[in-house]
Length: 500
Image (tube, rainbow, N blue to C red; front, side, top):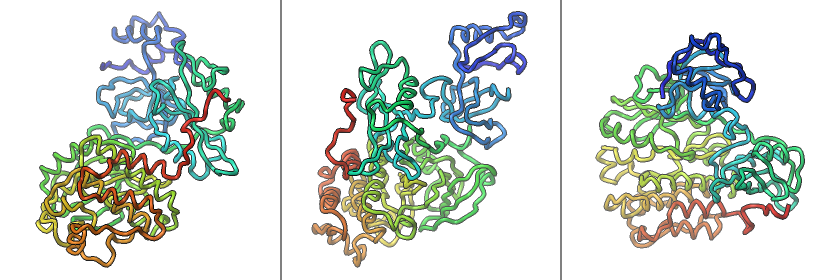
């Protein structure tokens, strides 16, 4: 629904709000001055029908149509039919403009609570809580993965046998609407439950002390209607890398926003085919995929994405801080990549060029998959013939390299090769062998031996990824589950509530 907003004066006339956004008084002497639809809005506010939204993070306007705001600022939504960017009126300033919809939540809702992390898996909760700088008692609440309508409380703990670890407690919902972890302590709201356990451990592993810190989410796109953008709006600042088909730069969009820019050499792919594929790519949204922000669709094609501070996974484990990482963290990075690829699998999409060079790393060892789907569009003869230096033979499944049969199962093969890159800190696969030799040997049944320092059970999983019959290779869903639990003892996922 779209409403013409009242003036700033009318807004002040309309509402006297306390911190729960309940209408305390309507100045009836001025009521007739309001537009008719705002009389209805006023009536619904009185009945609790209008929802105000609150900012979860600070946001700096990127265009003249955006609103800048601070965490805690409040908004009235004017138009929310656009999905990713809503037209809103700031209660604080009275100004109208666009705001990213994933930066706000209904005021006084669970979503607006700092400790509520929404749809987050157990493993991602553990990754966040175990980040350096967090202490025992750091916590978050999230939707339960296993029980619809229930929540999970995840707490950072420490003990002598396990060291730093995370405990999970299921928060169940009563039919009457209350919440509990143990039936002897029931609460009307989640807020009251959290408050109780911040004051007393009351059977939990530790009292809740600090809300888990988080980083701002990426906005969906750079701004409203900023998809096909003019080349002049981008400033290329620092060259990050160069490949056969172009370069990668750190840069700025619109003088306001740090981005990564991939420039493609003219002739690499058809602009029309690229734009068609890009429309699909921008809809593939997942925490473990690098989001596509915008494109310059005329040659030379520019692809604008999130900037990832630590660069490619290959460079990170060969020359960056990643070369000092131990196996558990390397396996966790593999689990994150499998998580992203499991999403691509569910969406019936194919990556076609999965390798460490096409994985990007952010702070706190967050991994995201880049360049998904682009390989299909490359028109270079040497590449399309699947021969020569430009084609990644050593990462490619035999049926894809020999006959062009690319499927999600050929991506699984590539993932097995990527696992060797991780455990060897970036060694080129099949050391000492040239591409032609690799093709011949693999066709004869040769598979890379277990790399030094790699557990045999992990090598067995690599060999499953390299099964000759694509249908015998595991799914990414299975690989994600295997890798996430690789170092986890066979203990229950949740702490038993009734023993508290």
